[in-house]
Figure 1 (cartoon, each protein chain N blue to C red):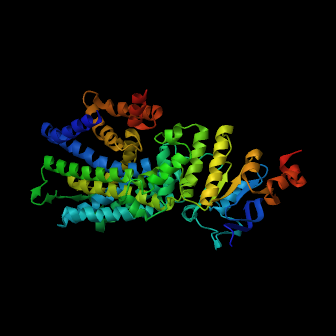
Figure 2 (cartoon, one colour):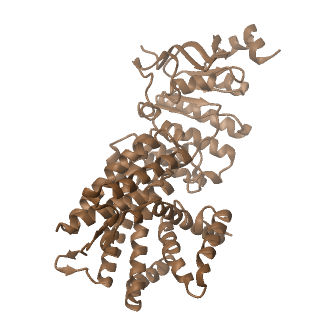
Figure 3 (cartoon, chains in turn blue, orange):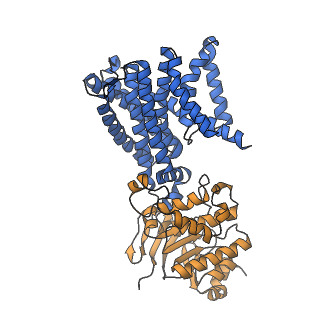
Length: 305
Length: 247
């Protein structure tokens, strides 16, 4: 049953771009990129229980790393390397406040960080070109295979998503995943059982942020033009919404949440005039009020009865 | 021979209130030491200071002769000190088996080896033995949150033993556990004590349980030790009767 479902999903993901117009392919690619970013946040928030309102900032860091390097003629893989290491290191540092504060206090610390990154992207013109943004970002060529067309680039992103999913799947099923869950459920008890909660907290931030950076590296060549407002607090809140709506702490949560956040508003736009955002907002509020564990939590409840 | 645990002049004040006020005692290898006293007498605070959950205001703690004051709980656990908390603390979303594997997985190898290595971190067999020993076999695959209170309590105690510990501090292991299960728990503790030479310190209000399990008892009142002795001596001590046991 499960296997059939996954086979159908995989087939649809591979077949979809051939049946879609360019805008549809663009949306689907955006879904892939946002799913990757949300997978990172799900690791930090869903599995390890550390709230972060800064995931959008890491997408920004990755996107600017990619934009600035590739417009200078560097290959995209170098941007992947640099953005991943940079986000890993900055994410690790951002973990330090989490060793002292939790919950909404931590939310505020990470929110300040997101704002700081946004201000840096806007004001440090010598590096980031400020509000003018970076344009003409090239799409990659892979061993002679060009990913310049929308369909090719979609498959490139899908490949990265597959790799990130596999790595995350491995991580959450390793002893680290168990330690993350313990950290989320009861950090004091975990500590008393030999789990170094400080190091795991830092790692939860570092790994989650690094995945955010990877999403950013794909975002830049997708849009081919980036400017600071794309990575302000809105994006962080949107990613938080994706994780919560999909089902925080469920492996497939980010896939579903990103679909709801990226695809549903576009789909609802047809035939509802300007009201679709209101309907969308009400649907999300109802879901959060009646099922805080998200869509996957809802389906789990439904199938158990 | 050094005592397993040595506490010297330990004190802890919260603002102006001193919860623990200059407590000194030793625990010898293989001993089952009881720690009793009225509510608010500082028993749990004493545990928390010994095990690094709280930083003591004064005093020292030594394990096997080495100073451990100020070490973090996870470091102490890896030195072979296990504990349970007064309130039940299992991980409800993990299965019984996974709770036990978690409780043992951090004791060997580096953090990185646990990312790339085996899924059970090499302690799966030890977890199975613990499941069998504590008669949790039928529940091994259940989420811990689905267990009854008494079963969770057993699991909680079993987790403390996954460190293969020399010393285990148990904070009210009998609280809320039915008499049959309690007798089983007592048997398990005695067995581990006899076969593994594990040393215990047990906080408990259930007098029958303490008196039948422990070889020596300390009585705490208002942050100080007011009496020490065998169960029979403690029962007969007028100061203890007045402060705690009642007439």
